[in-house]
Image 1 (tube, protein in one colour):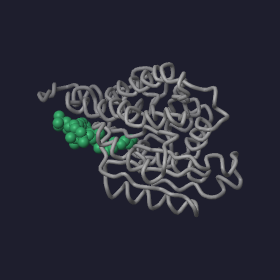
Image 2 (spheres, protein in one colour):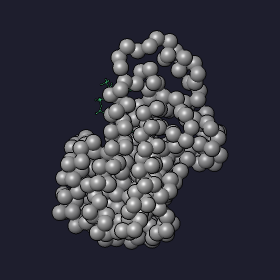
Image 3 (tube, rainbow, N blue to C red):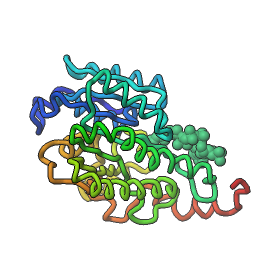
Image 4 (cartoon, helix red, strand yellow):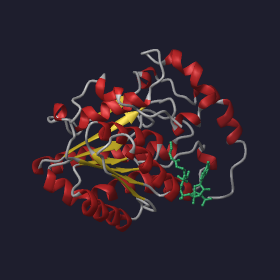
Length: 290
Ligand code: COA
């Protein structure tokens, strides 16, 4: 899913070809469609990368794929890592430092998502998403902190726009991402004095991603609602990622960069067509499972 960035991102793009030469990016959720394009951009501009994921096949496959992007790059796979377990991330960090020498940039992108209304969202389902997105983000910084401190590195959390107002069917993700934004802001303040920057990137609907795939039936209608009159692309995510890690953003910390063409300002959500009919049906009987 989702096409690769290619050499034109460098040859005809906005960035110096060797912008991240000698640097290493550590990406959780790196096999996913959003985080993989972030890794692609960093690799094309000179970085080496560690792709960290829970699913072994997907993670190894993504790392192999990324390895093809630049002749002299080193991309390692860190499979079987569950961000809910800090020790599991620590092992990936140790492997990365051993094989790539250092970590300069951290992308905390591992996420869980599905559409579910409150009545059909169990306590455990809510916990799973908060654990993966919020605790997982905390754990990722915890495990990489020493490297970030040594290298005056930078963190980018993958957030969302779901918690700026109440969006139905996304209670779990909204709550988790609100926490991620809060975590990033406080880290910016605490870690700024040791030279570490912390920011969030909040994608809207991005074509060719798992997130949008789940909402496919609404996409066409939604384009007209986007102030910039188009759906987001993976390249839009790549450009913002490069900017936030680049020296151009050296005075930027504690921010949330929304990459959604202005959509959230309109109050239009991808679930609005199924509201309130579906939510009324969903609430017709209380689900007995807690
Ligand atoms: N609707 C309602 N509940 C759901 C659900 C859905 N579509 N999918 C999972 N759950 C619930 C499960 O029923 C379970 O709750 P229960 O124990 O009360 O039955 C709970 O979530 C945990 O599910 P589990 O299968 O044990 O998964 P997990 O803890 O390993 O977490 C998830 C993984 C739940 C986040 C899963 O959706 C996932 O792996 N998704 C793929 C990755 C992803 O979504 N990436 C984001 C791309 S946008």
